[in-house]
Structures are given as structure tokens and as C-alpha cells.
Image (cartoon, rainbow, N blue to C red; front, side, top):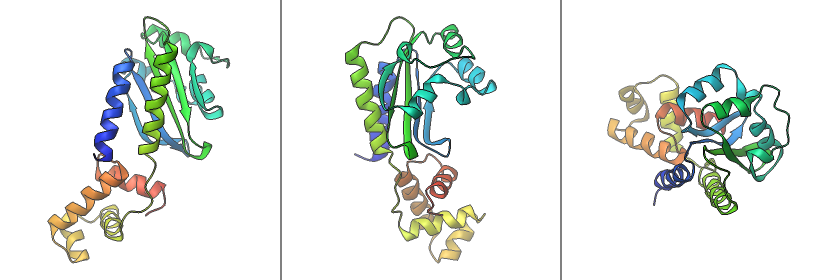
Length: 203
């Protein structure tokens, strides 16, 4: 089973356990996650972004300072911007936060439901999924030289034909190298693969 298939399987499990959605930030480095996904109400996501709540969210503050799993209602941190109440207006009434990994590469996940608190058994299952997601998205640092060269050409502005000619390979071989690099870095696009490669200093 490929890493991408397993990643999708774990996200599907998380989706099934989070009736009101989830927000995932995996391997947060330099304030940005290497993998991010959210299934919360798009209106809440827009409201959250417009108000720059990521810088003020008590869930994120908890996740950066603690490891483990906790119900949102048990996070005893100030919420001067009333984010919890506003989230409830969008159906995010109850939730659980899970944080794992070193502070240099922390993963933080929030899962929500509108009807009741998460049970202990549900929290344990969510925490297991989050730890698995953290593990399988651990940044790879061993791209082949061929993959690095292909990414470097595209990052430098070369089109596929020009990059292939520069490397002395066919265009289909270049594309194969880019695909394998994307899979290795768990990136959906070549641009995302280049960004991840830069972040982990492969380019």
C-alpha cells in the first residue's frame, strides 16, 4: 500500500469520526504545516481566515504547548476573541484536540461534532489516527538525485521539454521522476512538491 493510499484511508477514518468536520495541520514548521486539510463548514473557514484566528486560537496554543488529546471544553486557556462561541455558531459545539510530535515538527488536529461531547473511546481512536497521520507524513529526506534534479529544473522555470533536454532524458522519463518525487513528498502537485523540498532543504 502506498503512503498516499494510507493517507487517504486515515483521512477517511477521521472524517467518519468527525460529524461536524475536522482541521488537520501535520508537521507544523516555521508556523506552516507540511500537510493541511479541513472539512469544517467553508463559511467558518472563511470567517476564521479573515479574522486571522490561527494566531489567536486557544486550540492551536494548547497544541503547541502540550501533547496528547483533550476535549475543547477542557482547554483552560484564555479566549479573548471568543473563538469557541463563534465556532459554535457554525455547528462546532463540541470537539477534541490532538497534538503530537516534537515542537520542531508538531501535528495538531481538531475534530468537531454538534450534538454531544466525544466519548473517551472515540478520543482514543481519533488520537490513534492522528499519530498514524503524523508518522506516515514524516518528511522524507532521501529523494534520489534524479528526483531532485527534475524538481530543481522545474523550480528554475524550465518547461517539461526543456528540463528533459537539459537532463538528457525523455519527457516521459522526466514526468515519471516528478510523479515519484510528488509521491515521496506526499504532494498533490509538482509546485507543492517543490515547496516541500525547499522547506526540508532538499532544494
